[in-house]
Image (tube, rainbow, N blue to C red; front, side):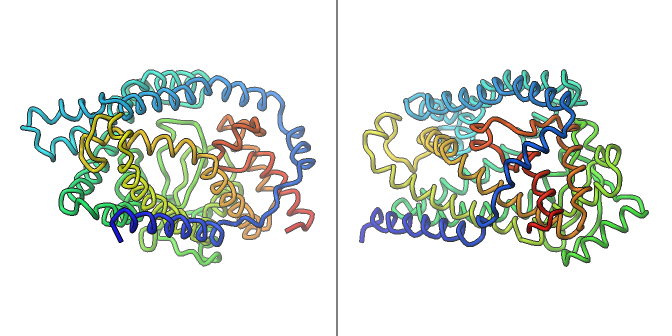
Length: 418
């Protein structure tokens, strides 16, 4: 068989594997919380807080969705016209059109253009978050975080681009196979190294002081069969008033991380309820599930890009000769960006199902639905959440069940409905 036929077979196999993994590992069987309970929960929330949360999200939507659409438009303009290939050429010219310069610097330039053009909308969103009192950052602090984010993304992108285009040069007919394996490996690797190497770039972590809460959290993890190395406190208050906690790392690097804002805003039993939810992710190996699905999706994307490279009209539109050359990077980015927007509802659905399972785990582990519900009230109030968002937005982008769904689930648990 030809490489293209092998690639088509491989793509079919990867898609099937992705679907099978999703069916087997994602908890599809849990029924949604009864709508009647959700409406009761909504009525029980402070109506002034509900109004404020909805106003906050209404104010954010133009900037958030505007940035998404503008970024997509810029990416498509670069990728589906010769502009992107010319930009890569321009950046590589001072280096004698060296392929490394084109691949790495040219690729970063294409990404940077979209980032810079959407930066004003990101700044606009920051003004809204500050206006509603959720952000504690000055403009200087915000700018530093933006630069840090760019730097981290640039390092990861540079490594990925250099590896990818090295493969295309060494194996011009079979790069799709090696590239798919490399993309899958990179997704898995990032799952391990991001918590350890990247989180300290944005936050400082200090061990939680010895005391009843730390003892309870370590005991909770032990009782749950999830070994953790330590309990850390993140200095989230230097940028936000939002409250949160999470379990970070894998194996020997796993630790419970609690925002200092959560410690200030919530009583110990509610902190325990949040941590119980996060332990559920570790208990059910949700990081593994996400890594596996992400790895299969990344591998399939590489193979699909190779097959798209056989569409001559698409290459001519982008002004390139081959999908595997650095000048075609804008085209690849355009295709990936468009696919990401189309796939967003499915990704959100998977995330909501996983989060709902972690909620159920927290209820089982603590046996305290009243505290779970009060914590959901606090999360929504302090974080300015919309407790019952518009259906279209919920289906498209909600990564968690809504506040009223989570409160309704706690009430169903209290009635003995498991």
